[in-house]
Amino acid sequence: MRPLKRFAPGTFLPTIALMIVLAVAGNQQSAVSSANADTITGAASGAPVSVALPNFTALVKKEGPAVINISSTRKVRGAFPSPSFPGISPDDPFNEFFRRFAPGDEAPREFRSHSLGSGFIVSTDGYVLTNAHVVEDADEVTVRLTDQREFKVKVIGSDRRSDIALLKIPARDLPVVNIGDSSKLEVGEWVVAIGSPFGFTNSVSQGIVSAMGRSLPGEDIVPFIQTDVPINPGNSGGPLFNMNGEVIGVNSQIYSRSGGYMGLSFAIPIDLAMKVKDELLKHGTVRRGRLGITIQSVSPEHAKSFDLAKASGALITSLEKDGPADRAGLQIGDIVLKFNGKDMASTDDLVRAVANAAPGSSAKLQIWRNGASKEITVSLGETKAESMAQKQEPQGKATEPGHLGIAVHELTRDEQLELHTDGHLVVEAVTGVAAESGIQPGDIIIAVNSQRVSTTRQLRAVLDKAGKRAAILVQREGNTIFLPLKFQKE
Image (cartoon, rainbow, N blue to C red; front, side):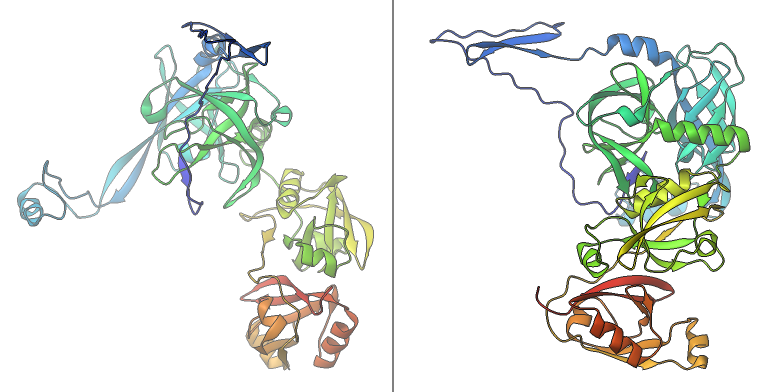
């Protein structure tokens, strides 16, 4: 199980905390207790209350046999760790003394690394889904079923972007899970995980769905399901069930500062996992669409600068030359509002929509340009890099009223070649509003809103016409980004 990094400190919460207060008339007290009770009944405001508690036994009995333990082995070249000695701290001077005379070899050599995970059988002829990181770079993968049978399996394909891998067990008539529909999952639903935390096979844990469509650092194509189900190392690749006994997710990551469960778990939606499975089975890899653009989020300041009613969509900051978007006529400063009729509320929405589209297919984009909506049809390319569309987010803060405070220098052709840019204006000094907005010396100004500028006179004229706000496109360290500026009080 991969612990997430750079998250704010978490708070450990028990998976379920249930307190029932029974109010009765007078001084009489009563309590209901039953080891096998499915409901608890009390009284509140004179009316009976029945609280249904979930019972997972039937689900586990039916679906558990299709959940398997996965062990992977890979060869690693490196140095063996120094010998350790019971009761002696690594910092103790005697540890170094004993280490020198104890058998051990610090020279690089080849040894085997072992890892554990979980998976689940999706077809009677032995196809298995798990996480890609469970079998990554493995030389040998072994699975163990609940009936204690073991098989060496073949990795059919693995997709690092979605963290899904497809395996094949050389057996038939195997138990299988029921596949559900993760798009129908709702926050607050009870869910159950079955897996092998720390190697304890077919362990069951439960909780509720905490949130849907979570975006995690470095994971831009997976809208994760967040739960409070206790998940630990070894649960990776195991199924997440709804109360109908259907798999609605693949347990993948946890939030942790310790490496263990801390109340936040994340699963890959089964709809996405099954689509990846079909691609791996058909092609051995996953083919994804590509637009050839760099985008950033639309802030409220951007929306006002571009006369957009609300802050939504994906703002195009650069185009791949002769790429799919460029050939279709998209421009820097366009804001993508819809993709094939679906609203794009954020950059993540657009990245996922493009990734899920077939290469070579046509996509209809609704864009916002020069204060009006326009529709453009794009023939999607096929991604070959790790990212379909780079996202660049502003680092500057919101600005306060004041002087713009920017001094620019017009670049010569030789300077453009040296800086690898087709921009014409470089920032030499910056103060006031421009500095507070995040513009820095050395930034190359490309455009204001959607209008390219190439001279200081043109820059001044465009800014004069911009009114109270403008979004300036700058190139910085090879990336381009729109920075919103506010000139006056509103």
